[in-house]
Length: 387
Image (cartoon, rainbow, N blue to C red; front, side):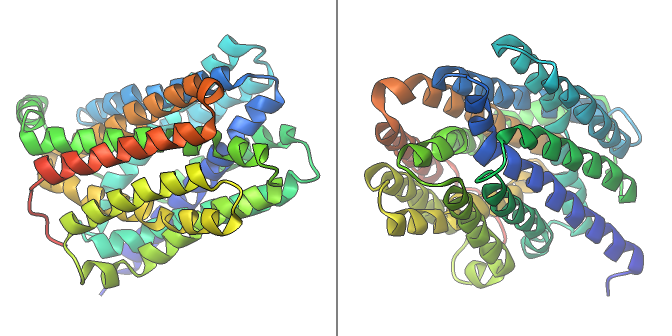
């Protein structure tokens, strides 16, 4: 039976995911459009978003290292929750590429440090059960869906200048919610953690795992950086763009909600491989049929696998590859290699190639990246993981 305090903690964690991914719902579909609204070119937008992703390589690992020396990682999350909005307010003073980049790197350093710590706390509360994790994490998807639908409708008649205001409000709500979390991760000693951690990093399955996640996020680069712009180029309205984004995440919610049904049919490794193939198919559909609403709808439904299933599977791989006291740093490394390095490379390459090659061909290259991830997972990631 779940205790009242445990139930309250789960509720607070679910609220964090709701707010955090509501903020992501502002950034992914609309931040590129906001930068375009401010007069930045495609290559500059790609570079800015690549820089934002690059900070996610450094920040989670630094914060995980610092947290291992302190008795309260949650206090660091609260500090991050305070500094992110404080630095973000400078966006109204920033003028030009370098100043906007400085603001994005500044608030991104603190903002990106929060999620890996919360993932560890959540897995601690639910004792590494994938199904229980999904029931909490799905509220992040709900927050994303609501946000993109509301903003898609709003920006049909309101200027994009409202976007930073909405983002700041969400950041302050995240900070407030950190004080409703009571669970703490157990820190480890530096000597034991460093030796064991670096030993784990050099194993074949860990290298394959990190490479798969990097390639997967590289393949998402065109989606996260230019999908809204791509649809706008094909004469889709802001509201329809919001609906397509929301549809993908609605499929994600459905999979998180019914993940046990899927896990009862195939192993986690099988779902990893199946989902990578569906991801490859998704990018090819977007590349080859951008004018077909039906094809784009189906491609967005594949988001259930290209994100939700792959994320749930990989989250379960982390405590297996990085057990016990290494889990926090392993989670940070997972985030840094995928959402950090992979996201940065994906955004930068997308921006570099978008204008000379065109959006369709860039999505074909995204498909090649996810197909390569499939091969790496098939050959190198043979670790047995319980459902």
